[in-house]
Length: 362
Image 1 (tube, rainbow, N blue to C red):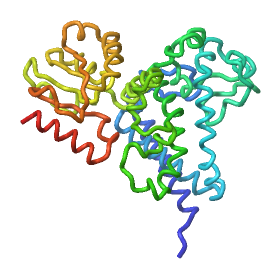
Image 2: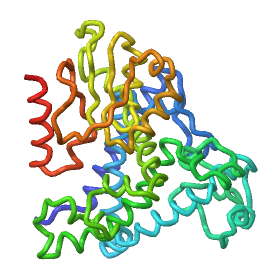
Image 3: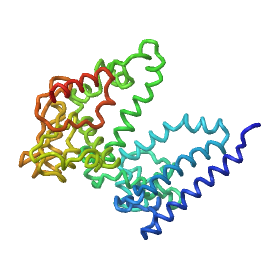
Image 4: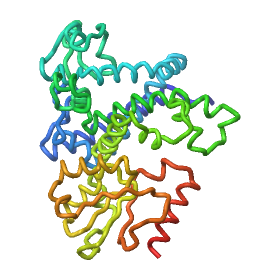
């Protein structure tokens, strides 16, 4: 007996309807509305409803079912073609991001595509694909909640004269993903299918190394002269990733109240220090050390002084240059904290890192 496609459609449709009902019940209980896609402003307060456990669970079900129902209902060839051409969407989104379209629409309101393109000397093109922007009338576009999440908060004039002004955490993360990650992804099939590199765990033989045309790692690339802007963007991007993926999680993964006053916490490979800033705000009695490459330390000092100057001035937060694969210089730490670090390295390299921390703790 063949499986029934119509039965699949009904089951998926019912799953979506049931999940929407759970969201509606949660909204009614809290007397709030669900964020509208057509809103031209992104608000963290309005977005909080998506983090409520029962709402978050329902959203996961809706997204999964919606993706599956689209796959079931469309001809297989069209689904494969859509996947094959997704790179166009990424490329178009990067153009809109780097051309400051969101900021332009914030300043000028709904605007004709000719005016949007003119401010960056671009040829006019469609912007409404996938609901990133909204076409309010023919060729006139406005921001949506999606596009507004990319807003740096800076003026268009400032962004044109100072590219570093764009390095606001979440827009920086999207820019980084659509730039270097996008380029590296294009090289991934060649690396995985080549007999010379298909089984390699050498970090000098990656899709990234192929894009950068260098015999070195991603982090060595960031430290090269001339790549300061990319390094700063990466630091901001990691902060952006943290901000949009439960930034307060560091407060929940360990019972920090169990540590005596003056206890030392070392953030190993801590980047610009955003995690230690979060910890410092809640536990001012802890001594916090951000460790990373020497080139990153200047960015970390700049960031921590900007967002929590009192912690830097008092010495609560310190920044230390350290190669994480060499002996750990801080021997009396109560906690060695690692987040988004191990996945950057091979198993054997990560084992070396962990041994260094174990040796310091013994």
